[in-house]
Image 1: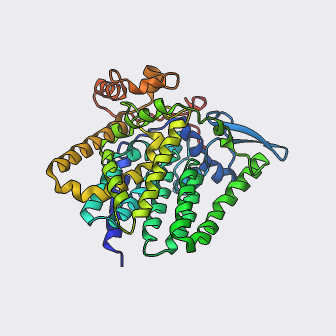
Image 2: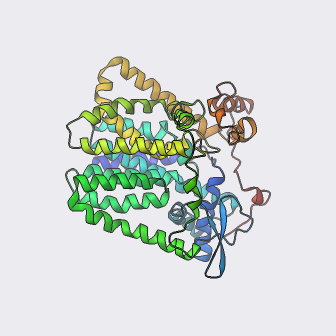
Image 3: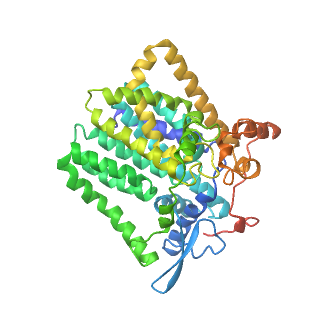
Amino acid sequence: MIKPDTKIALCLAAVCAVVYTINLRVVDAGDCWASRYLPISILKEGNLDLNEFRGLKFWIIETKSRGKIYRVTNFPVLPGILATPVFGAAWLMGIPITRISSAYLGKLAATLFSALSVVFVFLILRRLLLRKAALLLSAVYAFGTCTWAISSQSLWQHGLSQALLAIALYCLFRASREPAFAGYCGLILSAAVLARYTNGLIFVVIFIYVAHRHRSQLARFLLLSLPAAVFFLLYNWYYFDNPGVFAYCWAGGKFYASWTAALPGLLFSPNRGLFVFSPVLIFSLPGAVRAWKSGSDHAVLFRYLIVTMVAYVLLMAKWFWWWGGHCYGYRMLVDLSPLFVVLIGPAFPALVRNRPTRLLFAISAALSIYIQILGALYYDATWEWKVAGIDRNPSSVWWVKNGLFQYTLRRAAHDGWKVRRTVFLPPEHRGHNKRYL
């Protein structure tokens, strides 16, 4: 018999899937292209290279291994691998896999990943709060964070990353009464690293936590982390002829941004700030204070999570491309959004008991949802490349006049509030909707 909380979680996922896809458009950038071609390569040739897509150049590198030339993506391949069932199901149903349809199938996979993250955020919050409160905060996560406007809208790394982090977090909370789940977390968290390499920082901190609080589960944690490690090494050996060399190695020397410029930009700037695009997340700060001081079963876990989040934000603030290129909002921090919402939990009962803070929470939640609707319906990358030139001029994240919100609203009004449904294709692939499968 399905438990009531499980039924609610599944219903919430279904609602999210509908809402995320109801705009009937793909909101993406060049970072998503290789990932949505990878399932085609798996289905067509049974490999993880992109040699058959000779015209595709964005975030593709050529490598020589065992005397052969391979063209592979610069990014983690796990999102593309786990999106393959979506592409395969469409193919079996007779849907042509073309340049256009592959973009929509990639979005569908991202939508499913994102909706899965909502399920586990709800299940975590249910361990901390009453059912109505957990459902409300889960809805805030689903529709008031960039999970909607970014992660669910195309096959970025983020949707799968958030889903895996939320599942890992659920395992850690459940481990307070069922310690074996701390060991199971190793499998999920190592997969999260394969989905997005910066999650390696989270893996390290949680490994220390497991060694500290669940030492009996440490061997299981490490053992279940091995499949991801083996896959990573074998992939690198096969395509780079060296298990220690991988496509993203070039990024190692790119953490040189100034914290004084990047940190406030990531958190508070009008065109990229976390607390601007999701003002409701500001309530995670009093939640963090309360969680740190609490004497609950989860107090130590909360402290490790807070340390993890601070370290992750500081890491992203050192990344040379800290503004995230062409995107809507705080893409570089969106992976942390499940953690931010869970941190609201410890302070939530006190928030709703006090009328002024309850009203402030409601206003900030409504504003957060409105901002995400704006991004999901009307954002494209025009402001970044045509108006701000953000990659050449990162200081444009602080523009208020003619900033991203103002530009997007003005353009939407000019179009009569019609939703543009054009798919952003690689330059080499525009003009012909080629069929692949």
